[in-house]
Structures are given as C-alpha cells and as structure tokens.
Length: 331
Image 1 (cartoon, rainbow, N blue to C red):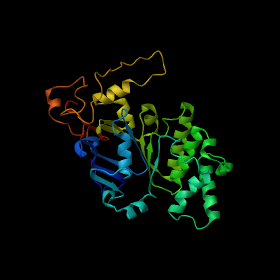
Image 2: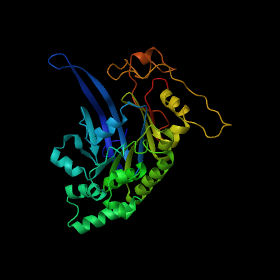
Image 3: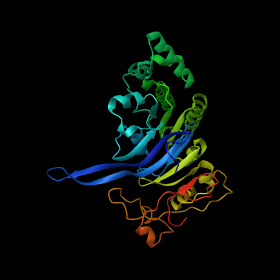
C-alpha cells in the first residue's frame, strides 16, 4: 500500500469503517450494528478511473458517499490531496465541495422537477460564488450544455421533458459546474438503456481526457467497468477482496469471488464457452457476518483456517510488476 505523501495520489482511504447502529427495546438502546464498510484501505491516482464492483448490498455506494462525507464515517481516515478531510468542520468541508462531486445512480430522482435546467446548473455556481453577473452565469451554463452534448434551448426546460440519458447528461453538467478534480460516479449508467449507456460512458471518458478528471466509478456491470477503469477493486460484504489493474484483474483473477463474478459475464461468441462458477448459499447478513473470512461459507477453496482468521489485503504478484492485491489465505 502506498503512502499518503506519494506523488500522484489524489485520494487515500485508510481503515475506513461505516457502521449503522440498530436500536431496539422500549428505550431504543443500541442492540447491534451493521458494518456497511469494514476496514477498507486503498489509493486513487490523479487522472485515473478507479472501478469498484460487487454484488448489490456489498457497500459500494455507502463507501462512495462516505468518502465525500455525505455519510459520516464511523472510523478511519480519508486523505484528499494529502489533507485528512474526516477532521474538517462543516465550513471547511463546504469549501472542499468544489473539488469533490458526485453523479448519482437515478437521473429521475436526482433532479428537482420544479427547477429548470438553468436553475439546476446555476445553483452550485451561486452557492460557491463562481460567477460575478447573471450574464456570466448564463454563458457558463450554456458552455456546460455544449460540453455535455445538450442543446442550448434546453436551458429553459424542466427535467420531465428529457429522456433518461439526457437527464444524466444534466447531472454530469451539474457535477462539472464547479470545476471539480474528483468525481464519485455512483452507478451512473445502470438505470439507462444499453445503447445510451455507451454514449454516457464515452462522454465521461472524453470529459476526463479534456478536463483531467479523476473518477471513482461504482458499478455492478463488469463489462462497463472493464471498459472505463484503470484499476478495479472488488468488494464483498463491506470489504475489498481483490485490487489490481483492469487488464490484470480480468485476465488473471486470483480471488475465488472475483473468479465467480467474471465467470458470469456473457460471451457474445456462441462458439466460445466459459466454465460457470456457481457459488453455494447466499450472501451472509452484514448484521451477523461469519467469523474469519467473510467469504468462507460460499468459497469452494474454504479450509479450517478460513473460519478462524480474517485474511489481509496483500500484494500477491512480483513486487517489480504492477500491484495485484488479494485478501485470501490460499492464493
């Protein structure tokens, strides 16, 4: 694991935990907790797309929101450009919002239906005091529409007048309005048709190239993640179980959970066949995770050690090669 001071690192997460208390009884005392994110650590390099994949409910979106402090972490540290943002007060955190933005999953729910596009895109400009006049503000909004592939006459329309793909373009334009360096993309294409997904992904890649953006790209569609990501982390029950470059992860998956996920990707060529790995059982409850390795009840390689000790995310390949980290006793 690289250090926070290393050059080229824009975001570093260290031992991040997010737990939700469960209350019960007449006095509503805490009777338990759900660990949505459990001791997660990783780095994101400036200008890259860091993919985050896993089954629904594994903690991907919670991790993304916690990194931005839209959800407060229970413990751990989040370093953005070398600064620990978990210690910032609300006033300083608000200043930081210009540099860190988010694109939400549902373009239908994330836009206020009572606001025009001009109001939606102009609101962050007003909040952060970016434009000095109404004319400058309008010109900036029109420029955002041009950059995101929307017609200029869209400025006076309301969200219900747009398709899902167009709405997501508005959401992207809103995130770009304050000129951020880092954007959390929380499953930005999962609610869209397949043909529209490709357009949005291509738009995001063009924006990254032109503006030097850094993405945390959260998704459950493994092919989309493979296409857009530089490096990929695989989550299971709140923990990262494998982290590697996109090419290395897809060509040489080491963790049995990653292997099972990749075996489920459809192959377009009917003459080619891939052995499907079927996992037994269901994902354990995050309220009562299993002891030892969280994956051991479903793992085909599970042994007695796996039921006792929790494996650490460690480097598995030759140190002279690109990093490939795996959390497994028997890799």
